[in-house]
Length: 289
Image (cartoon, rainbow, N blue to C red; front, side):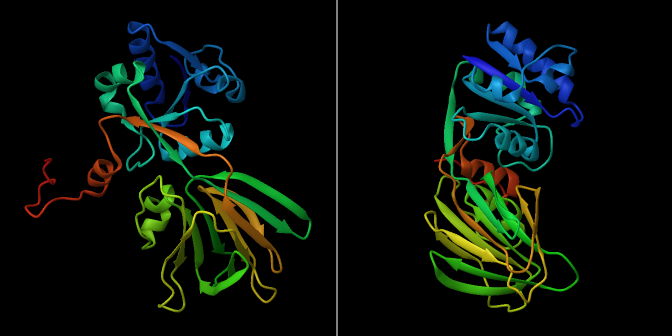
C-alpha cells in the first residue's frame, strides 16, 4: 500500500505527528509520499496534491475536520479513500485521534480499514455576470443574511415551490453534514451514508418553519428574490461569494461520492456516543451485547 500524507502546517503538533507517522511507517515497511507543503515541515521535497493523489492507495490528512474538507475540495472527484488524524477537538470526519497513533497505525498500514462512501452536493450559481460552479460541498451550503435585516430565501425542489424563508439564513446539508452546523441549529442527525438533503432554517421568523429532509435526488433552486437583500453563500466553511437579488443557486447531488476511511472497529454510532457524550440510563456508556 502506498500512502500519501497531507498535514495542516498551521495546526500545533502537526510536525510532531507527521514525524511519528513516518517513523511507524518505516518500521512497517510502508511507502509514504508527502504533499509539497507537508514535506516542507521536514525540509523535504514533496509533490503537488493533484499529482500525489494519482500515485497512492490511501490519503492521510493530519489536522481537523476543516483541514480534511479543504483537502477533499482539492482532490474531488478522486475515488482514493481519505483518512483523517484529528489534532483538534470535536471531529466527526477524522477517524483517528493523534494520541492513539501507535496503537492503530499498524492496522492502517495493513489496510484494515472500512470505506464509507459519502454524498456531497454540487452548487451552480446563476449570477447576472454568468454561471459559476462549486464542484463539491461535503457538509453543507449555507445562505446567510448580509446585513442586520433578516434574509428572504425562496426555495423550490424539483420545480415545486417549497417556501419563502424569512430567517437569519438557511443551511442545506448532506447526511454527512447533519452532525455539523445543521445539528447546532437544531437539525436532525442522519446516518452519514444516507443519500438525502436537509433544509435547516437559522432562527426563522415563523417558528413553525422546522427542518425538512428531502430526497438525495432532489434538485433545489434557492433564490434571493428581487425585493430581498444579498445573501452570503458559504460551503463547508469556505467563502462562496454573494447571491444578489434576482440571482439563484441550484443545489443537487454531486456526480461522484467522497470515500472516507475509518478504522474497522469504530462505527458511526460509537463516534456519536464519544463525541456527543451519549450514555445509558445509569449515566455510563451503553454496554455492548
